[in-house]
Image 1 (cartoon, rainbow, N blue to C red):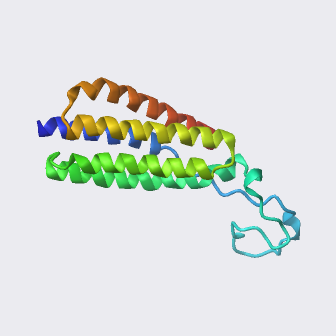
Image 2 (tube, rainbow, N blue to C red; image 1 turned 180 degrees about the vertical axis):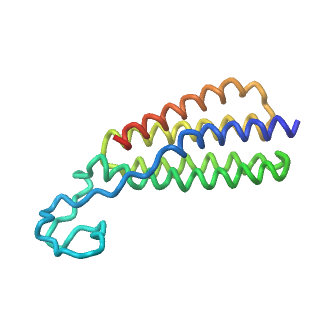
Image 3 (cartoon, rainbow, N blue to C red; image 1 turned 30 degrees about the vertical axis):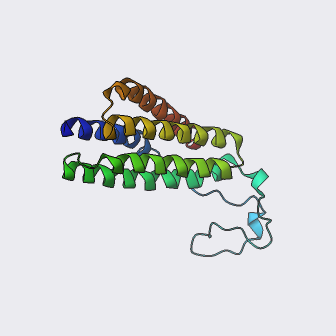
Amino acid sequence: MNRHIATWATVAIAAFSLTACSAAPTAPVAPTGDVSSAPATSAPAPVQSSPAAEEPTTSEQTLAEACIEPNLKLLEAEAELVKVQAEMAKSGGKDPKSSVKALAAMADVFGKLAESSSNPEVKKALTGMQKGYAKLSDLMNKLLVKKDYSAAADAAKVMAELQEALQAFQKLCSA
């Protein structure tokens, strides 16, 4: 029975990892101010805008700017889920709640990122990821913790939907 738990946890984490590992963070975008007035230096210019350039307001957030933090969070999330997967393997699937908690935490992270994004395309993609992780967390709780194996088909469907949402975000933010 513990093999079933470990297998489902691995499948859930792998669904995320396969998509997230290919989503490299986009390079920071230079400020939209006049860059010719910036002093020349031998080192790369910092990401922050110069005092002469105005900070973009939240409503002026470009697609590239809106993608930076979520891309970084995807990489952090992947690392965290790999840790959870390693712990599950080490315990032989005896602590499935850690996987459920990690998925719920992912839903929270992407929900907060969606709320803070002013770019409607990025907000929509992040909301899709948040909903996918929330559903997957609930289904993995049924499947792994409560041992309700009737949730397996729904879990597989939600993992496919989540992977689609991750791919949509990746396509949007890598353009």
